[in-house]
Amino acid sequence: MNEPEHKMGIKGSDTRQIFFNDVKVPVENLLSERGNGFKIAVNILNIGRIKLGIAAIGGSKEVLNNAIRYSNERKQFKTAISQFGAIKHKLAEMALKIYASETASYRAGQNIDDLIEDFKGQGMEDGQAKLKALEQFAIECAIMKVHGSEVLDYVVDEGVQVYGGMGYSADAPMDRSYRDARINRIFEGTNEINRMLVVDMMLKRAMKGELDLMGPAMAVAKEIMSIPDFGSDEEEGLFIAEKKVLKNLKKAALMVSGAAVQKFMMTLSNEQEILMNVADMAIEVYVAESVLLRVEKLIGIKGEEAVALQKQMALVYLHEAVEKVNNAGRAAITSFAEGDELRGMLMGLKRFTKIDPMNLKDARRQIADAMIAENKYIF
Image (cartoon, rainbow, N blue to C red; front, side, top):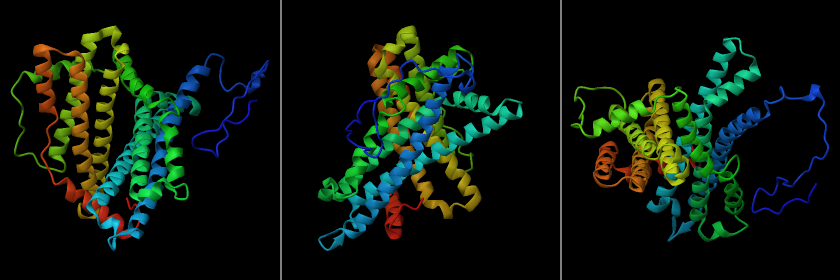
């Protein structure tokens, strides 16, 4: 056994190398049948990924609580800095990213639990049911690991900024938070690896016939050349326009991924930049959709007035997701398309990443003001 490593953060966790030489494991102590070790290890990674994403959100809430309290206490020009628009923007952005990531984690976790129960209902043994369910939702586990860890990184960085000079002091709470947060983008497979896994797993399922990607992708490619569907003015219901935006964001992701597959075929794995662009599109669509679904359900239970702020968070997040999908899509398209294909795909991307404008500043201020009044994260 080696000496403990000296790390940047998580110093309460002992990290050292351990060597096992000539170790024999009795047959009765095997966790499963011989040969199943790799499958179990991979599924343990899936569990670790979604759990890490959720743990990161817990840490994010604590950091935001500290930032809100400090912003209410710290005065500049005889005014609490929480009353300044720039600080409100930061607090609101931190909150809506936390809420969105937590929501997507709830969705993925519930889906996994439901599938475990379905498998057990079919007579599958408990351990096998869990392994099979986690395997089916490995993509979502990777998404939540990436999103949750990057939300935490964003939150701690902005937390330091809210504290200003004190944020850089080791006597203030942001110092440890900032250092401890950094490992989460490396744990359980780096975020770069997880992004590539998201796309790789989708493509493998498509090749096995478990997931139809190319059919919808080809349909989207045809749609680019057709007259846009402006929808019906008679449609009614909650989030009708927003659901259409989400549907179009999915088309954008299908368009880019389908074209990339056709262009590179078996060498696509070498185009890591494009894979990560496509993953970013998929991640944002999944999280934005999750928030809308949660808020829609809450409105059905509590009424729209009771969850007005959550609705604002969902709408602001959707607007930001549209921008991120557009940026990632453009980066991917310009990496491999040329001439008429380039122009056509950029035209399609523009069509699929449209959203009616709203006053994002006022929405963020409402979110921030509610937390400032309560002196904590309230969602």
